[in-house]
View (tube, rainbow, N blue to C red):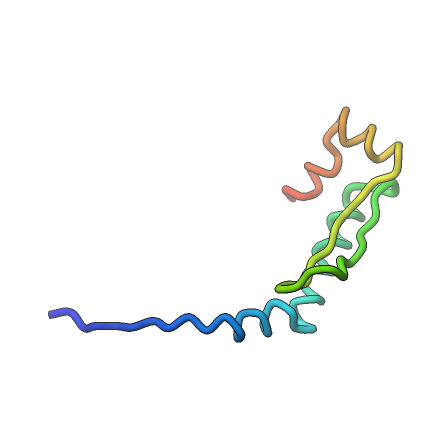
Length: 80
């Protein structure tokens, strides 16, 4: 005999979680760790234009771009 269960999605609550200071800490820590593991030619920066969640991105200088193209250093850092 099964029970009926109703799940109600309240989007506002998710946005509050995804935009929270704690989520920012988690995203920043992960981004900084990946950039550091990729090497000196990569850096992490917070994204400030995200409406529903905190975000960040890792970019490389010219040498970093070459290292990613030839040795996949950023890709390897992401998968560690």
